[in-house]
Amino acid sequence: MPAAARALVPWLLLGVGDPLLSVRMQSKRALRAVGPLAVPDAPDGALPTLLASAALDERWQTDVPRFFEDFVRALAAHSPAELPRLLALACPPESALADLAGKAELLAVRAALAGALLACRVEVDRTARWLLILLSHADLDVRRAAADALAHFPVEPRAPHCD
Image 1: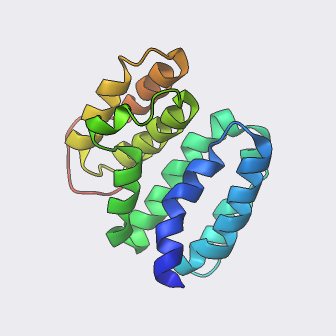
Image 2: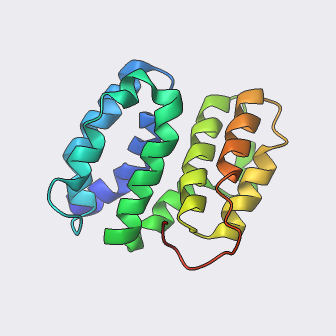
Image 3: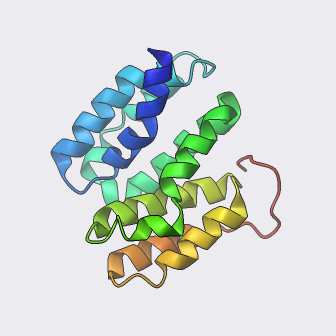
């Protein structure tokens, strides 16, 4: 189960940022169940505490980017080998944009996740390039999410970590 749980976590994180309340709530519920299996080295209770906040349900537009940062910080500290899974989902190849056409809300959530990866300095060049591509997207919310995420661009790129 831990391998299967690890594969689900990035997708469930996107669900936490979904505009639909029921999707956010069920994604959080599933993350509470599989998160500790996916990040076995995290201290007991760290991920359930992170996922317990009702603020993600009520103030998701402002709280999801912060939640993503906290989650990426926990992964960077306790299971850094899992960061490439998040990176692959948050920053797919540019060729994937055609597959994501008409999915502006999903792109905006991916941009927020990419911002969390930037905050932790995870593959800064790749992450920033993806966000720059999203800055030219036709949808205003996608461009706004990409711009907000780029606010985390580090002045001096370093090894993955969070301040």
